[in-house]
Length: 145
Image (cartoon, rainbow, N blue to C red; front, side):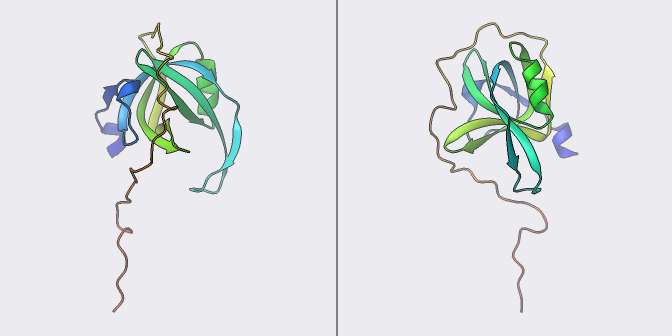
């Protein structure tokens, strides 16, 4: 699959923008908020979501963690993880780190000892000017003669 074989670029928290896609990020898990139950617009199913505050030496960001990944991130509080195949979303004017379809959360071999708490990129208001454009066979409008 395309997503599984793509070369991921290693980035830092300050490198992230609303258009960031297909990257790897090493972060320390600082805390995990309360779980909420939501209904997905994509599959109309009930899901659990929690926001975790993660960061590195350049800053912090909120990480939206879904379903079974919540427990994995809760267990990692205080330690460093690798987020592979991440992307950034904008939710209510705030940047959030998310995990892609083929994304993984793994323990990191390198530890982050200091986190820059002064630069929370999720607190900076951004406009969602970047929009996904669907690609594929069903994206063109049908023409009737």
